[in-house]
Length: 249
Figure 1 (cartoon, rainbow, N blue to C red):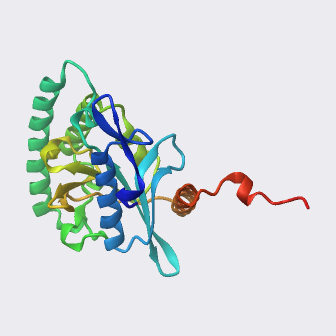
Figure 2: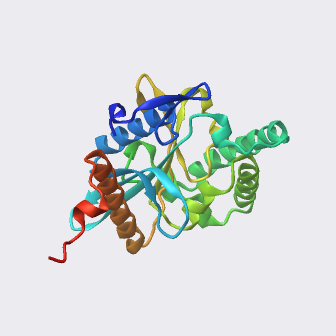
Figure 3: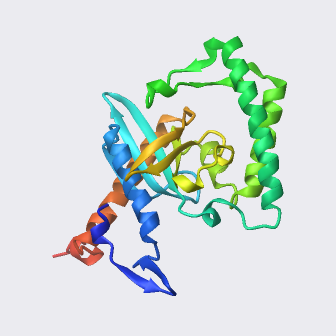
């Protein structure tokens, strides 16, 4: 979406778009839309209702794959810490604990890559950022670190949206889109990638994990992307229900 089509106004000292969205958030969504299309996601839309859950994605995208089902991706844009973290008095303590657990996780993953090279998963989005499926070896220490990380992140973040989208199989890939000043690798939800704004573009700061999801989920998301895109065009061209309603005459 071109930022020029969204007018802004002063609301209580801050600039908001007509739908209550700040220019900073809209800019991140625009960059995510560009990022996706540059990587072959030819079907994209903003504010897409996701299948099997009550959440909406800031940006959802679908990349065709010939005669096979393509790849789906969800982008969540966060412009401020208040959007990313739960507002509670234990934030500082939780962050310290999360950082320690994240350091243990990095050490474990570094060692597991050496001892289990066959666990590499050749993701189709970024060949240079192939991930590893460590969970298949049922490593007790690694499972414990993941449980601790999820618990601390759920306590820190505003609700459990990030975990829910993965659990419900909403897409193959998930990205958190952030200004550079907000990026903390330990705070990136498990399974999500991180894209940070830098010099007017997005840079991959943390690779996403590939998630296998049923074909029907893929097609449902593609359908919802098409619906969201149609709604956006109708608004832009001022087409309403009465305009497209079939006449009885």
